[in-house]
Image (tube, rainbow, N blue to C red; front, side):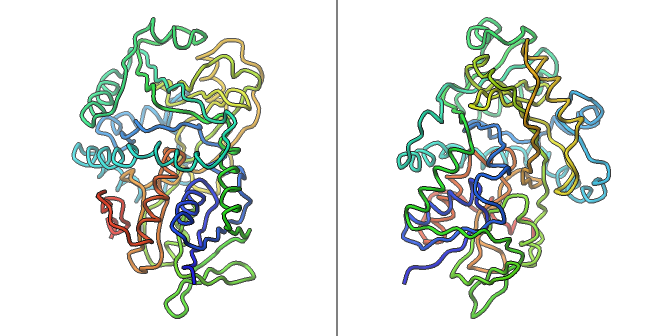
Length: 411
């Protein structure tokens, strides 16, 4: 009898876990309350494959800038004030993780898995027809001459980690992207980075591959987990499902389940937004991120997808029109002659205060595994995270240091 694995979550984390578990001979079923490709994080993300992005928000230079960011209408940070009381414990933990030692710890262990992210994707892409859905044109970051110490910090740390980066001047930026207004001072180009032309289509192709290999999908809202004979049982509204092992990979919604398992992981959500400007994707050759304002624009099948902002506000607050307006204004700051925008979208990035994901077994239950908390890098890190978890479930040896991703760090 094949070992039966149940996975909660049909985003890029859940589907990647499923495909790598199938490669190792496991019988895999995925559960989600919504169908694959629904408007969640794996649908609405920036579409970046970002193997260079090892420096996270827990930086020594960020804390002093937070008040100004919150007060600026064009800034990258916002807060739903009705959510503030619930965020206080998370913010305290976040502040404790902004020392230089903690910042470098996060950068080192993000770099460890980011370095393996593209090869893990290629293992899965080798089995599907991408039909031009991924472009290898690099990703460009630009900035003006403000906050230059932050830009120097980013460059220095990535150099220390061995990240390949190409500094570019005004002329080189213009040569790469001639349609951007000349507000920039300098930038950095990551020529080996990639972007998705349509993340939803890629996810659905990977999901179809999972089904073709014998995988099963049940559209059920898993509300709790109990145990029978030491085996986990998934409880939905009207049916129970028993498995040998379980993977919780439902992003920002994972916390309800981990709380029920009596493991208090400080998972919260960064709310991210996108809009589209249809029929304008010809204006950019590749994703461009304006570092000072914390937003980016990606050319996609749907047009130019403008993404950005970090809004702390939980899972239940409505979409903020001020954040949509912020994206519109920022896009018009970067490019001329944009039409009316479309597709106002809000999604939830699962984020932990040390900005490392949780990858590995539950503290309390050896047959429950976690794969969530990848903040802005969920799309980039899906396959490598799934590959790591599948190796753990198969009890394989690894030369990676996986302890920093363990949930026990919050005990």
